[in-house]
Length: 158
Ligand SMILES: Cc1cc2nc3c(=O)[nH]c(=O)nc-3n(C[C@H](O)[C@H](O)[C@H](O)COP(=O)(O)O)c2cc1C
Image (tube, rainbow, N blue to C red; front, side):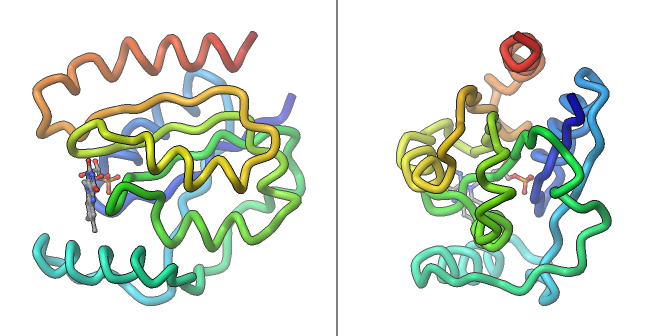
């Protein structure tokens, strides 16, 4: 089984989880980046990112370093923005063949309220089997992330 962990991360939390998950699964890693960079300051990020989500904006992605077509299974990682998945992930999921390979999803959020995000994104994932909600390292319960990742990886391995 050739696995690819695909993720987007603005401030590093999703990236940290992606690296841990990929190492445990011996999977390759693919970081998604948008052509247009996001602002550096947090308030500007909230304004711009929030606006993008509201408008269902699909950004242009930078060329990908790995081709999802060469993999059997994709594990997808997204932060939650405005209770939904992020624009870069929506751009990636425009490739329906890649979306069909996503069996597992991990979310990072500031507050843990991911129900709406899960609903928004699962519509695009016909073969989703496993998902896990992880917390930003600023949240005190983020200490549970490693145990949740362990369980998530075991479920994927079957
Ligand atoms: C534009 C924007 C919107 C966000 N909206 C939410 C939200 O609706 N709910 C929530 O719990 N966290 C929200 N967050 C917090 C992020 O989900 C959280 O900080 C996450 O860990 C970021 O992942 P990253 O470090 O990989 O970028 C938002 C962050 C940004 C930048």
